Image 1 (cartoon, rainbow, N blue to C red):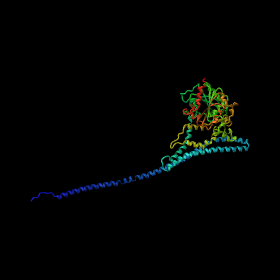
Image 2 (image 1 turned 90 degrees about the vertical axis):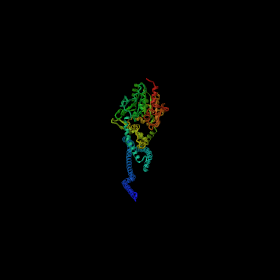
Image 3 (image 1 turned 180 degrees about the vertical axis):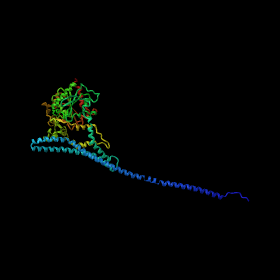
Image 4 (image 1 turned 120 degrees about the horizontal axis):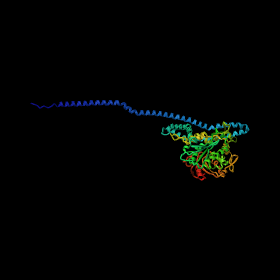
Length: 569
């Protein structure tokens, strides 16, 4: 019997199982290798994972180290700045004290020499009483200086204490803003500016300050043994001097010198150029160097009047018109004396005086100072020095020191030190720029003090110690004549009298004393003694000299109006 062929079913099942097993083994092998490969990458990346995990920690540790280092550096810088500020502070105090005491050492020599003579001529008991009065006077002056110093220190401490506390708080609590390091650095910069930068800026202003007769802006017109007359030319070349205009002759003060009347010509802050720039024929009388000119050393009030007459004659001849005489401060008082002497009759028909002491006895502060000084020591001999020519002159530094002593509460060295220090204070982190005006004013105060002829000083001394009589007669004579304020009106002189509202050098009562005896036009300027020659000499200011302001008119406006109304040649 024949059976049909049928494949062995078990064979196929076994074969498929082998195939499945082989496939599983293959996949298992692949999975094993893949697992090994993955595990290998894992173990290899473990350091990377640890580094990533510890990075923030190490960064924190590093930041703390950098912060500690920065704090150490900041503390060191703050400490060094504090030490520097302390050294500069002490140096500044010594410098200011030294500058204040220089006139004292000069006066001490004259005092010793004169007292050697007086001791042999004065009874011992009287000398003892005089010295006790002098001691009392010195104590009063010292008290004023101490009071002013303590007040200035208090004001400075209040201002700086608040800033120091804020800086300390910001530093202690690690706040943003002005910290102790910044505060100490600012203090060091401020004191360095005061001790070194400020004096340097003052010295550097010299080329811009004052009259420079060699720069082409002036013409020498006439000369005597004692003075030189210069014509001041307009700064703007488009402005022409009116040859037939009414001329003005300006007399500067003896002690303060002529440069205050041309403080900063380049910045249009110049009293003399305020006239010249209007086309007015403007002249200024400049005293020769007293150190090298014997004729100046022995000059008297009569010499002043005669030289002024000579200059007025020359100017009047050039322009054909009578001259306006303009005196500033002490120069105004001398101008009045020259007119009252009669030497300028027919030559001068108008007068301008600016902050001029016409009766010094009405200056309350100075009179009070002089009254407390024992009569024995009210002697110009204490300010005298002998020149190589053998002539005696008055030391200008000592004379200016007298004005400081009468205002010790404002002018003592500690007071001025703290005042300048506070003026040089800038905003946080910003450097203070010293203005050219401040530098020029200080240059004038420090370097522009002139010595004086004894005869001229005696005139001023008498005007401050002997009052004007009730009939207007002055305590000074020229050419043996009595001089009376009423003579100004009798001669038909038009007078503009200017004074400063806040003048602490020449009181209002001293400046307007002639009004008790004559009629004069009065102009009141804001600010202090030098403002007319400095602040208001700029043509764009509110009270510029060529303007009318309120009921007043400035000196230049007065001169321009005179030119329009007076007769032309």
